[in-house]
Image (cartoon, rainbow, N blue to C red; front, side, top):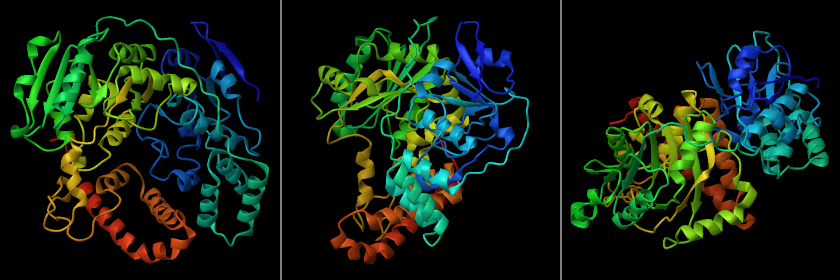
Length: 512
């Protein structure tokens, strides 16, 4: 490719095709983006939906976002895009194994986002050209993409979905299988050097807890030892009256404002929303009650967001081997993962255990959707909702935590009733006015609610096909006939989950 070169005022080199607005490009170069394009107006919006056969409802960026002037999008037009030269050289440019230049650009954008720690951005008006291109991807390139990016099972599943009777599909599949293999280790784009904190930003730290007062006190001690102290810590404690000791929280012990609210409602979503309502910091950090954090945890969250001029990030959540481990064990675990840790990029998950968001964006969403209480998926939904505001959630490898995961306590105590059937079952919030009786909905109705809420009906259909395909094909060949006989019951469970999800969709997003 012939790429032109532009040197920004800071001295950084940017490569580009076409004729971008260089003044706008100068502004973009100091932000969180690494690749920029205006492809939505050029026929690329939501291109290559065959990706849904692999990702369906499990990839946040399967659909391009609506109504935004700037948002994460990997669908790059090769004729009109700009990229940091350091990114282009690290990622080694387009992959010439694809016949089609359009597919080369899509593969480059997809991998930069999903696997290599780079943020590709759609920017309205960066390019003035409005030329609707026809995106044509051959079966050959489609299978090459699947073979090079995923396990072969996904290419086989695509063969099934496209029609195993089609000779052209078989020829394309066999060509890709015989000539290429999955690329496991792709180069990661290294994080920037973090700048010192500018100004005096204020931080509110939220801890929802239940039946884990000892773990919460340990986390409060970690917070009191921070190199950059929080302004305010809000503990929302749902521990029942007969199991709690209200004297444990000594507000005079800490150098930050400690607010303790005793929760009378049910659910971690409601708990976080109650805490958000009293937060005064310009940043809000969400944390679980069962984590340990090093002394530079808050400082590094603020440094990263300021360095990248970003609005939200998700820290590195490291699982402990058991609940008695400490920060020395965290250091050992971080040493073990080495280079795999060091990337930023816009991630595909959001964790309420370790995340930092500018309060202005939390206020725009009001809080967590309480339709998730009693189930799973609330943090992922919050992350997708931030993206739909045009706020990428960056991976922050500098702010780490050790997640202890004790065997008892926590808000899953309420949700554990979901596995019980019959008269002993306690109704979950998502059951609304239709309690579960003798058919337990699977997958989780709240996850199904997220799939219905955030993705298209066609992508939900792909998820259903793959869900049952994997159920049948995973496992011993000796028990295949038993899994086949179980399909009608699994279908009933799936439909029951979809039933509750649709009821929640009809109810709409709720925050209180």
